[in-house]
Length: 453
Ligand code: TYD
Ligand code: MG
Image (cartoon, rainbow, N blue to C red; front, top):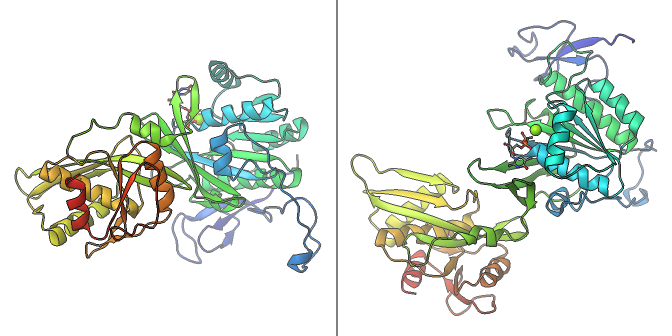
């Protein structure tokens, strides 16, 4: 084997040195020198075909992307309607969230459609993967397994077997033997990912990399991976709940505002086609104060979620405020608006707000629902079968939200009798079947309407 020369480069300023230095002599940063291979580190190749030089955009031939399905509709949706051959996809997430499960299921479905898939496991032995696969009831002839951590041997196996899709689980477990640093380090992760990138682009193979999330919440290898790959997906969820959300944060082949929803069951991950129904299934019994349903958007899909609030007098000292699934600062702002614009005396009250089911809601359209839940609990008056949508402004006005029609339609589909929306009463811009749509202009008016239904 020819020996490869390695060198060290500062990740902050790019200073190159032939040996490792604790501190970069150029920018003075400590611990910033990363090992790389001389000359071609981080180098990535363009998609197949040599560049013919600059040309007018109108003359660049349009090549239809030949996407293929993973057989898992929720995953296809997040990828932007299927997998693009030659693309490099990074799937990140906390340990144990279900990354390997999702990808082995996808691998199985892809291989069932007649495409060859190579599943490379750097963390589990082939027997372990096989065991999991048989537990999930999968094992198609087109699905190949390889337990290997040496990236050069992985590349040879890929070239030898010529699969259409490769799954590398995980990028932190593999290493480049030419580098002396240990697997999982920035230099190793970057070099291995670059090698997979070149392979994906030159051979037209779709490669999925599994990446672990560090304690700080970033993908290991300080975001270097996110810059290199075509698509970054995060698999998230609450350990205490079985549902999982697959979210796109970067996608060179589609939009990033789509999500996929799954449920972890004993037979692996199951797709959730009607998420609202799932979240509404164990909705609080009617007639309880402090519970309001909001119609929130996840990508292009509406999702109904129950917001629960509990307001009770503070025992001693400063009032406690706690939130789960909704933004803490947003709740503080809503409490301030309720105090000042509606005249609720919440100063001496503890307030707890929770989005039921372990969902995270980060859009201001949930404001009105949160405010109504807080008021309902404070006044001990239930709100009935009502869904609420609207952002709250600092002057107590209810502001319009995007995609109102979809939100209202979803509420009507699930049998809600009333939906509060932003707008002047009587002149609501939309109509819905079988649902009473009430426009409210101010928070005060909204509370009056909701609590008297
Ligand atoms: P895994 O895919 O190994 O997670 P990751 O690769 O992200 O670390 O999934 C691990 C968890 O999923 C494990 O704790 C058990 C659970 N699980 C199920 O509940 N049902 C199943 O069918 C499988 C395969 C796993
Ligand atoms: Mg795993």
